[in-house]
Image 1 (cartoon, rainbow, N blue to C red):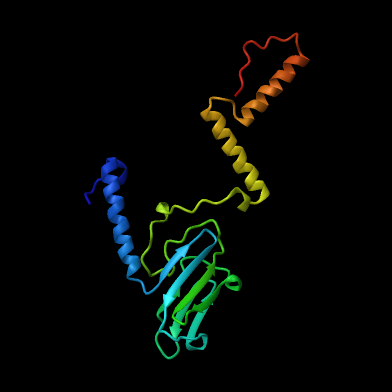
Image 2 (cartoon, rainbow, N blue to C red; image 1 turned 30 degrees about the vertical axis):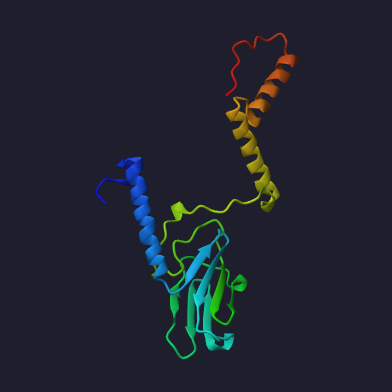
Length: 191
C-alpha cells in the first residue's frame, strides 16, 4: 500500500485496501489452532482435540483474564492473557463428539468487541464487525423505548414531518397561544 492516508484514498482504493486487509486477517486467523466467534456478550472458541478425548484428558484453566488449554502431559495448545476480562463463574467448556473442545467465555464488558482472544494472537479489525440484527423484543424496556422513538423520529424526518420533540414543542406553543390570545406570536420560532 502507498503511504497515502486512508482518508485521502478514493473509494476504489479504500475498497482494495479493505479487501487486502480482510484477506490478510483471514489468513492470520486460519493459522490459529482454534476458531472463534463473538457476540457483544460472549466469545465462543472451538478447538479441535484428538478423537476420543474426554474431559479428564484435558487441563483447562479459565481465569478472569487468563486462559490455558492443554492435553494432560503436554504443553498447552493455547495459553495466555485474554484480550479483555471475563465472568469466570458464567464461562464454561465442553467436549463435543469427543473431538472438539468448545469454550464459552462470558464477557465482563458486554458492550465491547474483542480484537483477539489471547493478547499475543493476531488482531481483527473490530470496526468492520457487522453484528447480527437484534430484535426490539431482546432489549430492556427503557432501551426499547429509546430505540422506537429514534426510529419514529427518523421516519418522520424522511417524510418531512416533525420529530416527536418538535411536535411536543409545537403543541406547547399552540397551548400557550390559546391561553394568551392578546400576544403576537407571528415571529415565534421553535428551536
